[in-house]
Structures are given as C-alpha cells and as structure tokens.
Figure: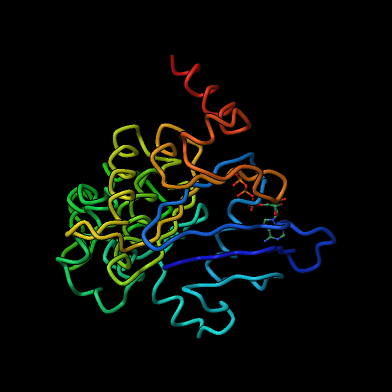
Length: 269
Ligand SMILES: Nc1ncnc2c1ncn2[C@@H]1O[C@H](COP(=O)(O)OP(=O)(O)OP(=O)(O)O)[C@@H](O)[C@H]1O
C-alpha cells in the first residue's frame, strides 16, 4: 500500500487545538516506517489518521486515491493493527486470536501460525490448549485449575507480556490479507528475547517469500536499536514531523533523532 499525506492536520472532536499539524510524508508499498518521539507528540494519532480511522484536514491518498473514496470495509480488510490499548477478552485463546479473522477461528493451523508469529505459541501449551479460557481475574496461569471439572475448559490468567503476545497474534492472523500493518509500541511488555524476535518478524513482513516488497509496515517504538533498521523514520514533536529520513541521514543531520539515539546507546554502554 502506498500512503501519501500532504498538509495533513487533525483535531479531536471538541478540542480547540489540532493534535496533528502540517504532516507531509510518502510511504512506498513495502516500505517500513518507524515513528519515534516524545510522549504525547501525536504518534498514535498519526497512525490512526493514516489508517483512515479519523476524519482529517488536508490530503491523504492511499494507492493514489483519496482515502475518503474508499469503502471503509475495503480499507479495513487490507489493514491490520495492534495498538497500545489492545483488548483482553474473557474468552478462549482461540477466540482472543480468531476475533481478528473470524473465517480462521476454527482453523487450528492458522491460529497456531499466527500465535507463533506473535510469540504466543508456548502460551497455548501452558494454558492447556486453544480452547482454554483466559481471564483478567483470579490467579496466575500456573495456579489455575490443574484439573478442571469434567467437560469444563481450563481458565487461565495471563501476565501483561502474555496478553500482549496474544494481541499481537490477533494482528498477525490478519497479516496475510493485509497490505498495511501497524504496530503501536508492540514490545512494551515483552522481554528482551521476545522483543528481538518480534521485530525480526515485523521487518520480514514487508517482503514476500520470493523477496518482493509486498506489505507496508508502520510501527511506533522507543527502541532505537530496532528503529534504525526501518526504511524511513519520522520524528514526531508537538503534532508535527520534525525530522524524516533513514537512520544514516538522520544521524548525519545531528538533530533530535541523533540525540535520542546517542542517549540510548550511551545508556547501554
Ligand atoms: N481520544 C482522544 N481525545 C482527545 N485527545 C486525545 C485523544 N487521544 C489522544 N489525545 C491527545 O492527543 C495528543 C497526542 O496523543 P497521542 O496518543 O497521539 O501521542 P503519542 O505520541 O502516541 O503518545 P505516547 O508516546 O505517550 O503514546 C495528547 O495530547 C493526547 O492527550
């Protein structure tokens, strides 16, 4: 999917000031865009506007056509996303993942493939199968009913990171149909290894098996060791893009991105 924004702005209903101002960018099909910046800078709002979820001012074109000309269902069909405030459903693992793509909800192979990509496959085993119920209330996975009453599914409570893996799997189960994939701070609750593996998979989403660039990917992250691998990087400050380019060009620029990158690199050293 190609996305082009010109003089894009957006204000939340009832707000006096716009949250996004004068946004200009082009993302070519199959490119990866990383968005970085301060908290409250407008990153989440920008991705939601670029997905056509909010009414905006200015020009927003998807594959050369004004976003308003599309049937929202068509856009939705070609898009998948995992936001920071993802849902946790008091339902089975199957339903928590399959709700992303109902036609695959009884297809165990597709569910497990999505859960593998989301790093959630081991959770299936731990909770006792795809039909084990997940809950936000009660004990932990380990302390839940080891022997549920006959004909009753197990009920398991997940950790924050495990819920995030389930939510990521819900996004991945749509990724075969999607030409735009969006992840908003997808590794905030993940351990270091899970984060590394997730971003490997996110970066590999843009290319098909024969190496063709196929899927446009946008993610928000504060992890600069990952962000540096993106084709394009946008720095958001006060509702606008203050710097735009790849890692090398932004480091040469010596501005905000270079400052953030060095801060993290120094802290790590
Ligand atoms: N639903 C909403 N209604 C009104 N204002 C909102 C809404 N969502 C976000 N905002 C405001 O928009 C601004 C930008 O928020 P946004 O979540 O896009 O920033 P962000 O860069 O993603 O922040 P963070 O890094 O903390 O996730 C903030 O001032 C926020 O208060």
